[in-house]
Image (cartoon, rainbow, N blue to C red; front, side):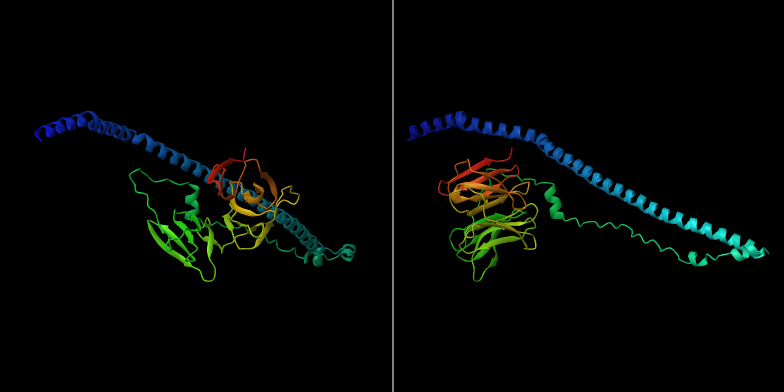
Length: 354
């Protein structure tokens, strides 16, 4: 037993010296290097923000300068109109004053001929010119919404380390969520078909937003103002908000893309390209929009994607990417298109803008 322990001691000493301690030294060296580079890396962040601050200040100055130029032009035009009217009044005043002088001389004169030839002009002068009414221009500043302003400045992604435990939130019913979305402040929303309920997950806590009676929430999206929108029942209706705040719905059963404005008023309905050479009827599944407010929707049965402009006019197809059973889709900040192929288990990235 003594000999076995001595052997174990020698083995442990060798392992500490040649394996464990060198690994800790390597980890410590890496940490020292990271700490030494912190100032430089954070300086890059603050420099980028300072540059953005300067750009925003410059844009604000340009906008205000433009408004001030417009005010100066309006003022000059206003002054010119009033001055012209004043000159006309002064001219009439001069004629009246001359008439006063003539009448005074005629009153003192005994010349019969001049008196007989006199014609009164008082009736003419009594037609006073209308008063010029010029409405002053009015400045109507728009209310600055903090949330919208913050979105213009971009997002600072917080620290995330490999030591952080990633959490999983299960649905209350134990069934699969039908759809999932993230709002502007990072809150996760998902629909639970079984319980007819939409939940939100924030800071690890799951809370019920709404339980619906008589219909089931399915696909969901969150608008830029933070309002959730849901489609209903088992028929697929994918939803997306465009940059112009239109709400775009891909209605699979109707074979249409339906677009309404903020007030819910129909703007247009797209049912496929009228001169299509595609073999099967148009059925719209996934839908998304890009930085130019173009609308992209999957035509699953014809293995292609339709691109529309903001007013619903067909622009072109994407039909050269061997798409198969495509459903969900989204566009990133660089206008890269991502398309899910359900049966294949693939997500395809498509660069469609050159």
